[in-house]
Image (tube, rainbow, N blue to C red):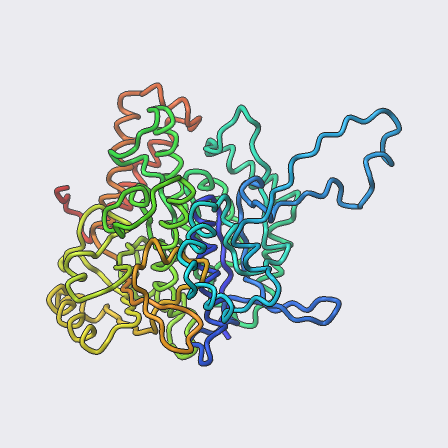
Length: 511
C-alpha cells in the first residue's frame, strides 16, 4: 500500500478538490475497481463500531467558504454564555446555512446509486439535475459526496471587513505561524495522517496562489523540516496577474505578481514537481464546451473546476491504480530527468469524442503557447476509455508530434473511461455521456498529458521581467508589497535562473 496525503487550499482549489473526491468515491461502486481506495482514504471506526472511509486530506479555506461544514458551536466545552456572565445579554445569532439541494437529495431516505440513476432517467430528470447541481451551488461543500474527518477541515479565520483575502507576503506567513501554533497543525493533524500510513508515497497539493501562496510557502518549509525526502506533486493555481488579461488595479497587480513569484521560488526549492495552472484560462471559453452555463460566478467555477479536476485526477491516476509500477516519486523522476525542471504543464481534451480532437481541441492549462515536439523534455500521457481505433490514431499522432531525442522519456498509460457521478455537471458539459447497462455511472473518454517543456520558461520570464522593470523604475506600487528592494533584486535573479533552467539551454528564445 502506498498512501498519499492530499492538501487543498483556497476557493478554486477546494472546488476542484471536491470534484476530485467525488470521483474517488465513485470508484468504490465498481465491481472490479481499477483504483485502490486505500491510497487516498483512511478508515475510522466510531463508537458503534461502524467503519467509514475518509479522505486522507488537509483542506484549508476561509471559514465562511466551508458552507454547511462550518462550525457553529459557541464554546468548545459546552458552557452556555449565561454560565460565564451574570449581567444582561444581547444575543446575536448568525443565520444557519441551509443544506444545498444536492445535499438534501443525497440524504433522502433509501438513497443509493440505483435510485439516483432511476431519478435521472425519468422524464423530469434533466430539469431536476440542473436545478440541484448548477444554479444553486453556493459553496464547494454543497456538492460533496464524501465525509471528512474533523482534522481534515482546517478553517482559517476570515479577515476583518476592512482587509482583503489577498494578504501581503509577510502577513500570510505570519498567519500560518499563528494558525500552526494555535491548532498544532504540523504536530497534530498532519503528523496523525502521516503516521497512519504504512508506506506513504508522497503528498499531492493544489492551492490558490493568490490567497494562499505565502501561507502554503510556510507550510512547505515546515513540512520539509520534518519530511526531507518525501516527494510532492503540486498544482499551483495562478491568478493571472502576470498576463495581459488581468483587470485589477496596478498596486494590487504588483502585489500579486510578487507574491506568486515568491511562492514559485519556494516550490522550486521545496517541491519535487509542480504543474502550473493558469487561472485566467478558467475564465474563458477557449477550449471548453460551448454548452457551459455562464449564469453566475459560482456556476462558472462549479463547472470549470469539474473539467480541471477531471484532468488533475487523470494525470495523477497512475499513483492510485491497483496494478501499476508508478508512484509520485517515479513520475517526478521521469518528468524531471534533467534534474532542474521542477515545473511542468497540464494539457488535455474533455470530453474526447474523435481523433480529430487531438488536432483541434487540445487545451493547455499551464501556458498560452502550443506545445511543440521540439520543446518537450518529457511527457506522461493517460488515455481513458479509448477504443482500439482511437488508440491507433493517438499513437500515430504521438509519433508525428514527438522528437526522437525525448522518445525514451515518454510514457503512455491506459485507463477506463472517466466516471460521472451525479454531482458532476453532466448536462452542461457532456451532452451525450456513455452509459453501459448495469453501470451505476455514465462515463466519458478523455485524454490528459503532463509534460516538462521549454514553454514553462516563458512564465518565469514574465514574472522576472515585470518585477525587474518595477525595481528599475522604483515604482511606487512596490510599496504595497512591503518587500525590501534588495530582496526583490534577489528574487529577480532567482526567477531568471528558473527561466534558464526551464528553457533547456542558456539561449534567449523569442516570445
